[in-house]
Length: 500
Image 1 (cartoon, rainbow, N blue to C red):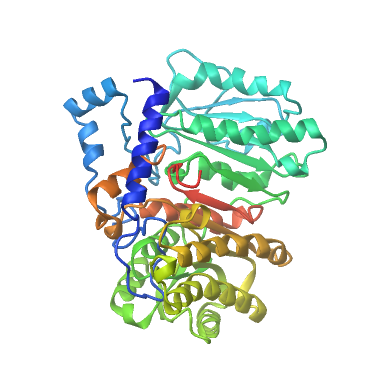
Image 2 (cartoon, rainbow, N blue to C red):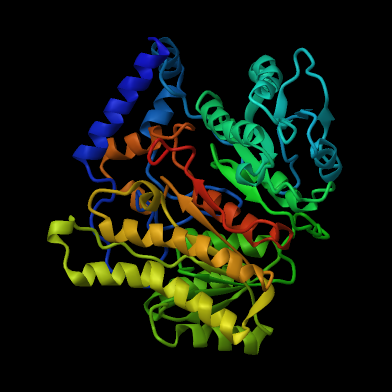
């Protein structure tokens, strides 16, 4: 079946499913400090960090096309075949093969120096499967120069290992010095997103824009390079990362980048919040797991599992920031990282929505994170050089039927990140957000079969993500080495067609 026909049929089928079956299931009770709901309400029970698996429903389509008869049929019909993604495991190589490095811009040497523990190649070799194809596009200053991009990637496309990476590093377009250069740099985004939709076997493509005034050593780039060029970014595909001009100091141990840091995670009793707590603890942080008093038992389990402390607090309460600040300051001297993971959905068509549903969602998902962040900064409880990470959603980017309140709240989170980034920079504090797509959880397991399978297949990776995929991205933002990374909203969606 020709590619254009397969794409059209898949798109029409996905649209039928989305229009026929709302992608959010039944309305969940107001859980106040519970974990956030994304476009497909990806919650709740989570597996261990080591297993990197959430407790979602069986992937019937994925199981079928990866069986012997299913694989044969999929090959004949040109059906997508989900690949088991290679995720981070401590002690394993970051990539499944060497890095083929190309381009003659200003950061190629810096990339090699920053990633001295990686294996690099300058020329493609026959029979070699590369873990990553990295191109320094910072030197592209004209439309004609874009041919260099084609010349590097086209011959190497069949040499990418399963779960490999394509990474393009360019210059922030709006900060370039001329019209031709801005055109060329902006073209990189369309190229990267398009090639991401061509890749097979779990490979991903992402783009990094670096500030033109970044020093030649580009130390502020290192944490982003190490995140993208590893299993930690397994479900991050077709995204644009923006890195500023600041320098960074590498941690003593890249396996413990959060050592010595104190992190508050709201909505930590279960789901993504619990996984964030686990990943933070794995990376060396002291974790304050926060959730509503009603979630006390589950919250205690999370705190005990990660060797942290539990804090019962309703994020919508007027004194929530005071409680967090007092608890963290008295116990640990302050907060280095706060993750605003708490969130709710209260779904109804707008014509049927009462003001209680509207107000509760806006209060929990948007007003509370804004109010708590402002208060922690004003009180000095958030340390200089701190990290603020918010949780948005694809629903905030693309919208979703029956979720005008939720979509507004999650779009507002994006606005909050954009507005607060320059203000917080004065204190050396960064603020970023993740926007998850379909994440495998107990909540998505309750979605009707057809809707669930369509949700998985609407991503370039043809599968749902795991809670750990969201947590790894948040941990990257939280790293002290990510001080040049602020104002970003990164989708963790496997390059979903929704909102693309």
